[in-house]
Amino acid sequence: MNYFNSSKQELEQEYQSLKKQYEDEKGKGLSLNMARGKPGKEQLDLSNDMLDIFNSKSDFIGSDGMDCRNYGILEGIDECRKLFGDILGVPANKVMVGGNSSLNMMFDTISCMMTKPIVEGCTPWIDVPDRKFLCPVPGYDRHFGITGYYGFEMIPVPMTCDGPDMDMIERLVSTDDSIKGIWCVPKYSNPQGITYSDETVRRFARLKPAAADFRIMWDNAYCIHDITDTPDELLNIYDECVKAGSEDLPILFCSTSKITFPGAGVAAMAASDNNMKVFKERYNYQVISYDKLNMMRHAIFFKDYNGVLNHMKKHKAILKPKFDIVLKALDSELAPTGVGEWTKPNGGYFVSIDVLEGTAKRVVRLCCEAGVVMTGAGATYPLGKDPKDSNIRIAPTFPPNDELEVAMEVFCICARLAACEKLLEK
Image 1: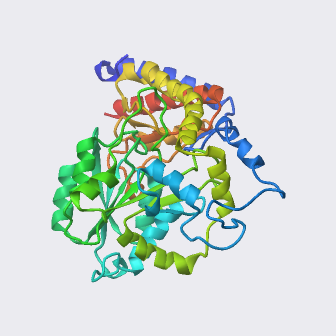
Image 2 (image 1 turned 90 degrees about the horizontal axis):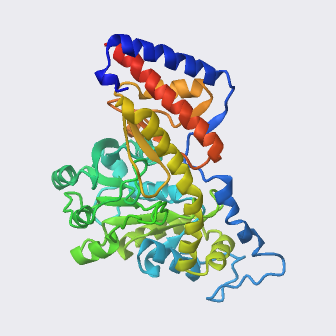
Image 3 (image 1 turned 30 degrees about the vertical axis):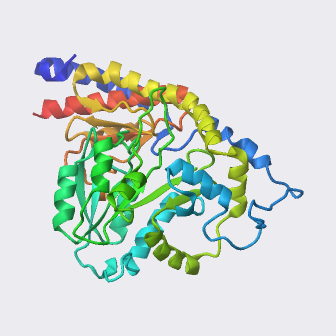
């Protein structure tokens, strides 16, 4: 039944039927959570052997002779720098390995540039009263939270199937030196699962910003998180920037949070020597060294980059059925009604859906009242303000499959119910 081709009487009948279905679901006392992209228990179990690597009799000496129990090595142990260099596609000597959170490293990076010019002669960002940051939308709420915390005006940049609107980006950054950077999740973007095209990556590398201290925050969080046998390929931005003579533009980030243990993984950043010199000056005062035992534990567990890729195949086997459950529900329950559009990503952690304009908040509220917790509507836009009130991020990874099926059934009922309400109002 296509809602847009239906009569008012047909919509009223549909509404009454959906209302009954919804009340039945509410009566089940459900308590299901799809609010954030957390790995499920099966995924966490894949890394349990890592916990047995060390005991009191272990050898804690790294390849450079360093006792990893002690202070030292701000940049991280060589084995881990090499591992992350391979993951990010950069030389190991450009990598700094941090604590457990890449988000923490991103926050620190912005914080550093707020108080210390990343380019000699530029003004610290804190002293730029009209500072701005570009935010591809829909995007990652925690990225927006960082620049919102530091008082940036956040300029939404629409996403296309090839990545952010590069015409808009090139026009803005070339004429406005108060624009200091852009957030990017270049492979399997959060939440749409879009991978930037080769041309988009090349255009990023060839940007000519009016601000000498403009930086691309390249959060490659899902760079090896494939869920199909035909994964997307992302052009290496570091290589393209070296070719274009713009090596200082990007600052790259990733972590093992969704590879091993969230909260107990390892994060890393990579940048040019010029950038890293400024960051390390701050880190020298901030921390003596990060958790080298955890770095060593990860390096021993994976051995090398191929070990990481083989580990991610096990994740794929767990995640593929979950995405299939979500997409099957949307295709069967929402597609015939015409009240939603959604992505079908080849990897990452989310499915992005645009429900009928003006109903996203209502859908999420209905789901919550029925016992299914979703990410808040509007979270994928700066300051939580989705101008169309349509985008919702579905996070299928955490619930067991049987619970995910129930949650998607409830979600589809709520999306259809909210759509019927909106159309009948008109």
